[in-house]
Image 1: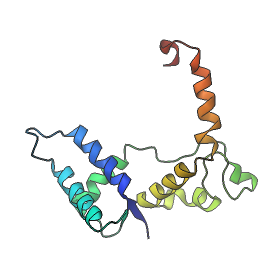
Image 2: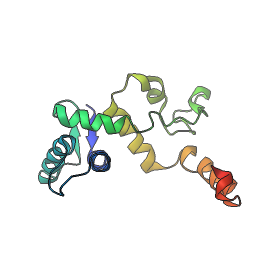
Image 3: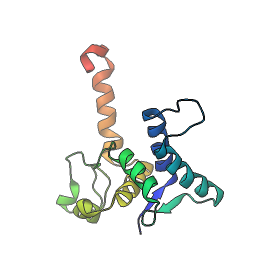
Image 4: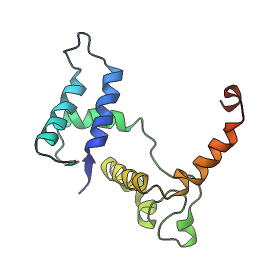
Length: 145
């Protein structure tokens, strides 16, 4: 079963804090209240994930609004699974994850993103990021935009 990690809930809370700041320093937007309730329960019960299925509707809607602002796929258009690799060297996903990506729920996709980011071994996290830094290191800021 897919789960939503507490770090994603924190990111969604921060998104909504920026999008709908408190007018008086006390009142929270409805999206923030819904996410804060889930977050508080997770902290109280010392859980780092909550099941995507059964997530309170208002909190899930607020989380999905944040999720919609995130990149959908880690693909960098260099897919070594098409060459027979079990793990893609470009993005870090397994062959099955690449094949079934469009069928995965948002929670499942975020779980894959979390794993590949923590591993940090895919080219999207090193070789191409390093090349981009090197390519822009000697250029004035105006030329890198």
